[in-house]
Image 1 (cartoon, rainbow, N blue to C red):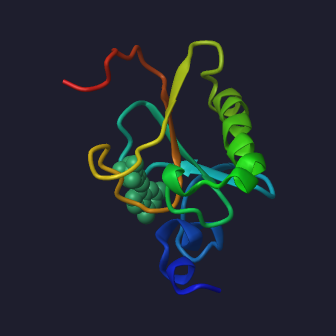
Image 2 (image 1 turned 90 degrees about the horizontal axis):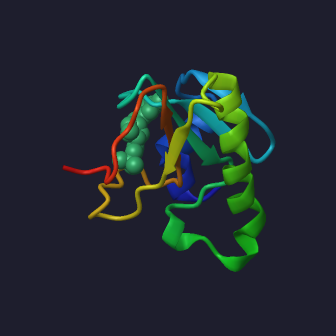
Length: 119
Ligand code: DGP
């Protein structure tokens, strides 16, 4: 295993070395509750395989990219917000304030949201 994967926080959650409230998983993705929720429902959807950011996705990663998006609808249904609505966002890089360098989609919902999503 590569060094960065051994020390990656979200790889450690995938391996069960760090506890998390997992709401859904399959062979491609894991979805677990964000430790600092910004909405009544806030779940992170991550690929099992370590990819550091959206910018590192390669054409051959098309299947895993699709699996992350497909999981969003499944997770929304589990959370009971499929009908009321939800938002899926990915922070990539410094301006977006990405802080964990393992791709994660933030699935948020359970309240009326505004747009644009910044002050
Ligand atoms: P981002 O800023 O987009 O890189 O989001 C990282 C998110 O990860 C942030 O909303 C908080 C969450 N997070 C950080 N550490 C942990 C952890 O140990 N467990 C869980 N469940 N979430 C975490």
